[in-house]
Image (tube, rainbow, N blue to C red; front, side):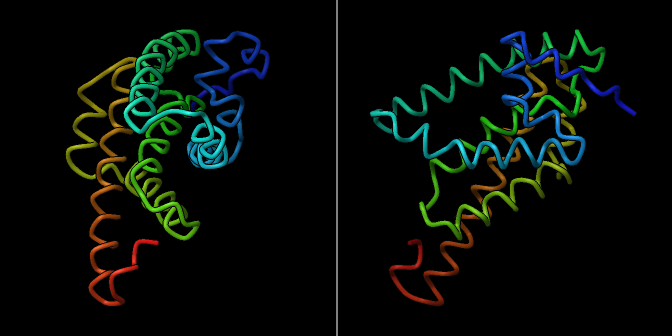
Length: 170
């Protein structure tokens, strides 16, 4: 069992990021709490006057920051991919949300699918999770879960459009 990190770690900016502004300190399902925090924060991120390309560049910067933050926090905690480190879930969820219809139902489905893929870790996610270590590994396996989520959502959008007509994605 992983040691519970102290909330005092939130005083350090690196840990504040790693712990998803505190959402990762939840005693119950910290990865899910980080994903839900990302979903709640997404409208604030998208409210910034950024083009889609600039928003993707911002997410890339968040990924790079996450690599370093997760690595540092993992070293401090003595567990490279501690469950309280949820910045990886947040960045991956923001990526997913940026590519899907903005309706609440599609976003909720995206959250559920992402958590499913992140927890089950189907191939090659499990292999990447065991192969890549430290901050990059922490961040990368969630990008793969995001890719699975986007593929599954694309299939659902396509199926919905086939069954119910052209306006299906909205």
